[in-house]
Length: 157
Image (cartoon, rainbow, N blue to C red; front, side, top):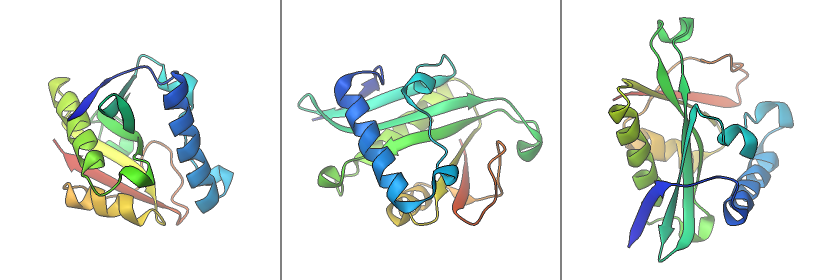
């Protein structure tokens, strides 16, 4: 049975999974194109971090950052989806979809009307996930550069 719940990102096994994600991203993009929240940033009060476990074993992570309104969002506050990752050996079981749905549910509980995210154009599995879950392409936001390496998405909650 899969459980999804908030946990601290500074646990050794979670930090190891974050390092695996960082290595994957570093293999795809130059450092300036990776917009990564490190463990300390994930501990900030404006971040909600959760894990997925099956029989106690870590099988995925995901987070959102609470963001104030800005010009790119017509002043509307939003939750920015961050640090979504399921190890390759665990993929194909809809774990990422369940993590994403859980994050969206939490955003709704906190009265956010929008979830936005930035992902890389070479992360084809992630793009398929987001589009399958109802995210649509949009322009850059949160000061991200529109450098051709990022794809920006939004979903009305």
